[in-house]
Length: 238
Image (cartoon, rainbow, N blue to C red; front, side, top):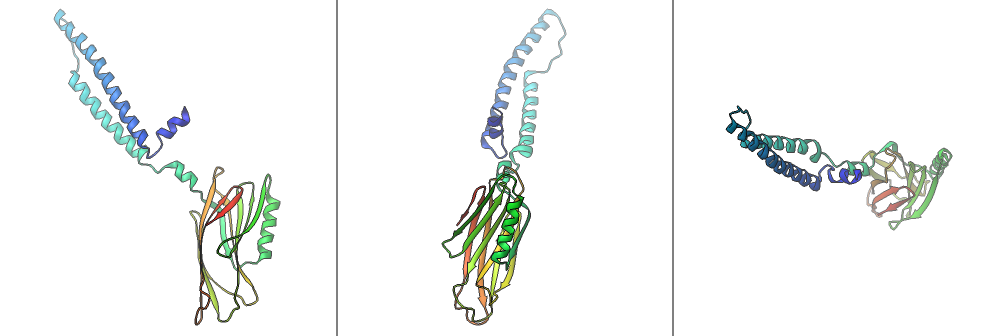
């Protein structure tokens, strides 16, 4: 019952607003019927010679109308117009998060081993190849702390100086920077580390973009765009 009421009177809920208007109208009808009987009873006492002081029915209804308008305005300002708290909770931020590109597989694997040692209840480690040629590496501990690494294997030799622009965006973490390709390395590796801010945080979402530019002609233009979701128990890359 409590959950149903919270759902009905949630911020920006049309059902809650209409329900409140219905309650105000119902109370108005009951007030009109009840006060009318009371008013008629007191007025009849005048016939017996008694002095009666009483507000008219019209005055009572005007006062009720004013009070109803004030109540609606208060409701609109303090409940209905507020951001939907359920949406805020589902849009999970992260804390103690950072982005680290120009990493190595050894560096990522070391970080994953450290995370595994920190795990108290559960630990998940996954690796998969994406349609755009990149490889995703994911580890999660206790349904909260996580590491997401993206690996882009170089499929062509380095002829001219080549640079990568990397952009990562999320509600609680963001970075945009440049990385020069190193001739002795055969892949670009980036790592995203974070910790869920809320215990009930179901999903953390990121937008990742990587494109390249070179000195001289760019014979191998690159434009990788990914939207991925880090969920409890796995990842989903689009």
